[in-house]
Length: 66
Image: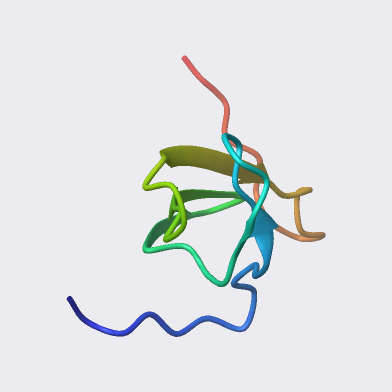
């Protein structure tokens, strides 16, 4: 697995199962204004996903569905 590098990568997220801190997500995917994270606990093995939504950046065009 390749190393993941990001200025906005969260860290020390608590495990949703046992509560132990997880250093960094094992995977993430960026899209405009949204990022998905996959977390895996080294202590209990539990995996879970999280999504972060970001506010619209000024000057960014709005998407309009037809």
